[in-house]
Length: 314
Image: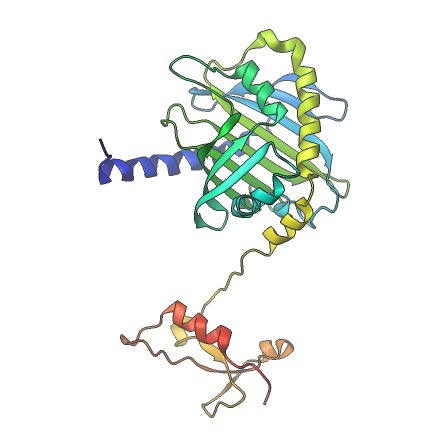
């Protein structure tokens, strides 16, 4: 049976709400209501707590002072855009084979549907201790050898300036069984050192205290995995691509007429001088005249003229 349009629309709204719920969880990452299961001398820790709605359990790895070689100027650009990671995954897998990402659809900057498999040792350890590999409700803790469909969103300068957060949400399972993880990165006091918080969403009864004696070694392995992940080969080049991947254009003051175009050197039309553009060699502007049949302003048409206009000085 194929889902109706109404059912599909309802599923999309539910998925969007779950995504927002995951981003709202970030405000809990740094409070004191976590039960510490293991801690390292550097302050890194492994902790857990019930989810805010009582329908899940949260497992947190808090990695402190992770050194990143050739780190970007700000933590907001430390995590790759999902689309950059996906489009470059084939070449990156030669150096880091445990993570494979393929882009299925790009909804917007940092908002992507992917197929991803992740077989890192820490994921396997989390899966063994907290997962459920048999029965009606399987829980893999995002350890997948076969690529699974997932929705990923990256928000820069969230939850605060000079930070970033990535949410990964499985979409192949029902809403009650969908797994998710959240990564938030922010700077530490020492240059090139960062704090990375990784949170898994487990089932309500997902915490197993019988593994207490193993949690210290699990935290050590997770810390090593985080350091390796943030310093994997070619990641510096990919971060630069990610930082320059989009160009954002802001248009304003339409209440005073149509937007302006930089004046061509050969233009005989009336010219307006904008002193703010002098340093860029763009002080001479003229009104944009649309050629569309309906006489209305269309952004695509305006951008085409804007980028192809001859900007050479007279």
